[in-house]
Structure formats: structure tokens, C-alpha cells
Amino acid sequence: MKEQFITTVRVKGKGETKARAFSDALNHVQAAVMNASPHILLRIEPQEVEVVHAHEATRKEAFLFFFLRRERRTYSVELDVTVNVTAINLDKVAFVTQR
Image 1 (tube, rainbow, N blue to C red):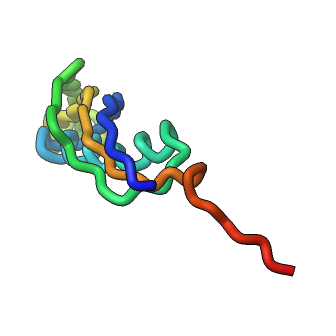
Image 2: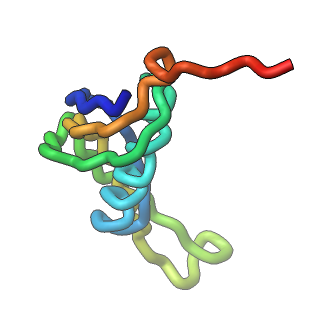
Image 3: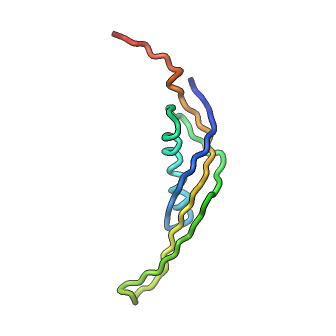
């Protein structure tokens, strides 16, 4: 009934700092595993994280085109996360029909 398997999911994240970009990407791991597996998930343990892409975008902005000039940076990452999943296989559960 209880099964363990290893899978790899690809997730993306964006943020104003590097830490927020990684955090946003790692927050999407659970949803990606749930979409890929028809089982009921009990535990998701990340085993390995590999960076596929890491980008930094810089843009300049100013108030009324002249005042308070600054550069804004945004970071985006794409990760391959290998996870060890513990799940319940509903196909192996025997349900009793009552009338």
C-alpha cells in the first residue's frame, strides 16, 4: 500500500533577490510532484537540486524620467529537483461496498 519512489521535477521561480527566487522555485516542488503522480502523497524529501538556468535582469527606472534614478534587479531560476516520495497507492487499497 505504501510506496517509495524517486522522481525529478523541473520548477521555476522569480524574485527580487537570489534567495527569493530559489525559495519561490522550491515552493513549487510539491505542486509539480502532485501533478505528476496519481497517488496520495505522504512525504516529499528533496535529495538533489541542480540549477538549469539562473538569470539576472537589470532595468533602470526614474521618477519623472530624471529624478531618483535607480537600478532594479530581478532574478529567475529554473531547477531540476530530485525528490524521494513516499505515497499511498490507491489501486492497492481494497474498498468494501455497503448497501
